[in-house]
Length: 89
Picture 1: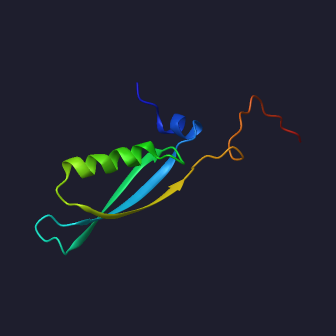
Picture 2: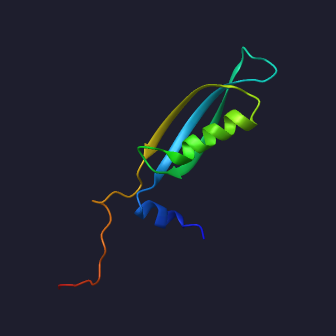
């Protein structure tokens, strides 16, 4: 069963955005871009590298370069478990 986005963020996943620059298959001197986003773990980025391997084996346009950024959406200082709430007048 797949984890929800919230479960992934609580387990340390963050949003990884990658910009792929690749050569057009019919015009090798022309570069094009492709934007990819997924939840991934840093510093190894297994999903990003899995996608790069997929690209290299299945897509005709050879990669020129990849630029990416990673942002944890929930960090330890931002999330805490609250079991009760007290209201003072």
